[in-house]
Image (cartoon, rainbow, N blue to C red; front, side, top):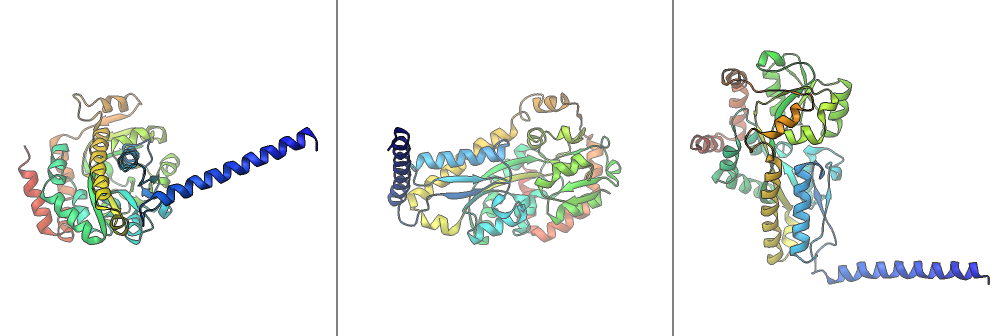
Length: 351
């Protein structure tokens, strides 16, 4: 046997030993887990960690792994890849157990949980103090009870943000400026109703399809929080006009599949809950960066990208409110007037 043959045999032995050790380590880890625990839990998000949404997922996973000493290991799957990118199928997949955990959007889950349309009612919630009053008060607790009844365990609130309007055509100050404009919207009938009422042509599509559509001119504009505008570099796909109308807000919700939740010990359930609350607070702070400081420096950054940023006057904003009031009233009835009334009362008390 030549020296080269000896070396090859030695290398193969080492490789086999490495595989055995690796397999043994995995088996040992699995054997050390409490009965009923999985080696990995799948966490679904729409956006990855280039965005506050995905950062929230990373923070939650890290906190849980650290605080449970590795008993609960979470892997994030962005792009709603566990349901083929279809954001509106995510909630059903959580209930069915295809997804173990999620940080989901109130908009994306509203087709299955009609009460989540509360946050999409046009011009209901106007600022950060208002959304905090809703999620942190009786209305927020009511919605968590509704989600629990719908088949998931809600743990904490996060935030995607107030949704602003961008387009490639012109500055938008009044509803008349939107006439005939093709605007990408998410898969919620309320959004179709609202943009139709404003005279636009709403086009429903997933986020994965949106940037190519903006780039090609298949759609003229879109509406999203500013953190998505900047992180996705939407100024590079012809979005040169930005309207700060804050017409609705999109909170995020940290949830766990019920069977998964019940498989954990009471101690670990409390750890996961507290980690979700802590991660949610951090995620909200990240999502609001540049918008709560004096002068809103994020807007200066966006203007520096060659984007025209405009804010409708109070009178112009009222024109948007009037144009969408019939949509508001229609959806108030569908959401449930008592819940909306409670939200309106809460908001009226916000200073």
